[in-house]
Image (cartoon, rainbow, N blue to C red; front, top):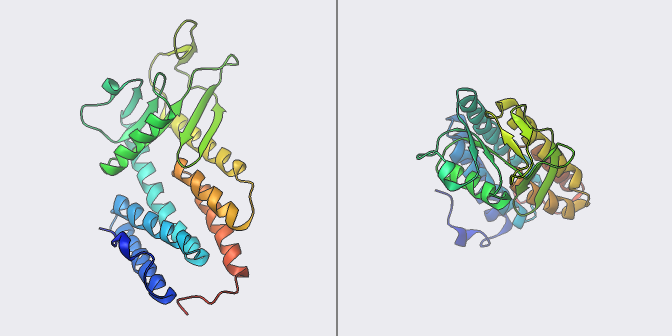
Length: 245
């Protein structure tokens, strides 16, 4: 379990830094023993606390184990999808009776917030899932896809080969089969790229933007790297003494 939240703001800067370092060490240890969900929980908590303390140097260091743990979970989901674990979910009844690892396409009448809820449920259950939420096909034959978190990210992608236009239905198309894993990976990557492009602030404001976008698209490796780079740049120009020194 993570450290009690009531301790977050107490103690000297050096004491708070020491608690962050302890969390980071525990996250790294969990990653080493391949307990990826525990590593994500610990690293996410450390990242949030470092952000609250404006400790950008530690934020930059936390990003790497968090990125790696999430990459491993995504790979587990993709591997399960390649073995048949692909699910198309338009209503709660479409979910497997017991949540299983794999790739989940959430589509109308379900919406982005429900896709996020499913992703959170999979994570809380320690089930590796890659969730993509789509909206109705456009007149140009594209699929709008959306990711919801502290920020909302939207973009458009080419539908999978199994989708064909069909008038008169909610999705404006029909699926004859399930999307391949490669489509889920591409859609997820495209959402993350859109998130990076949406972040236009500077300095601390850019960090805030990137964190909110990372909450919506946590699978995107380059978004972690972008956040780490920005934090590192801020830390390099900050004249505040490092609490760990």
